[in-house]
Length: 307
Image 1 (cartoon, one colour):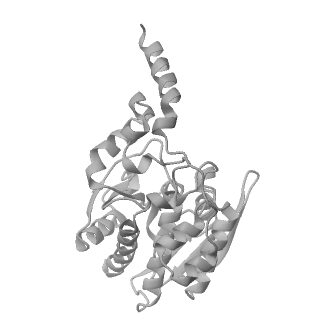
Image 2 (cartoon, rainbow, N blue to C red):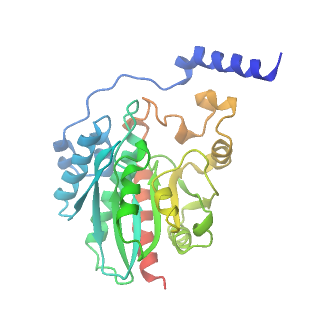
């Protein structure tokens, strides 16, 4: 039998048994924002955001920032195919700008806990810590809670196309922050090669004793940083993952069309619920959220001290 027919048979077979391998479940409505206010934490914020409409998720982010006394501005994004709002926090007094992004939107079929409420929640906790510290002098932090990432990086592209980027030191977009004990730095190509942003992320990981590694171009799973790399800036993606999954994850990213990945349980851990109804709060590890928060904070501190 020809190879193409074998692949078709494998595909149909995988679809036939998918109920046994895909994580599908009915869900209770997300708790009200008052649940988060009772005992504010990144985990509770993930629970509140999961499953909500994009507009509601963005409102939750603004409410959490308001509750923490963190000032922000809204950047309206409007074009012929998308309307949304970026929520932007700026801290510090430095002449150079470190840009972090975490997108607030989700795909329709997934509750969006790990993708990407996890990184949003960790980012808000990081901002809570950083606002209590003395204002940075070497670098300014611009944290963009972006809209429309799942619809073609709309919010990030709007910001990159309509703002002065001349002071940008480096860009890191955070994706899938809720599972794992290590982190990967992705799309380390072009301007990102040997760049300060990669160096400070690695140094922050070293300071915190968190295993990390770099990877080159990601052909399919891009994120908001790509809107900035197109402008010639050093911009990378940062993803949390179990260290034991590193080689499997590299293989998946490099060859995402391999038929073996049709079996969900064969995939790397963070991609077993990616863009599926299984991406709910029960998959999120609070220790991973805390690790992400600490990494964000330490990266800002290291960048602030860098020349």
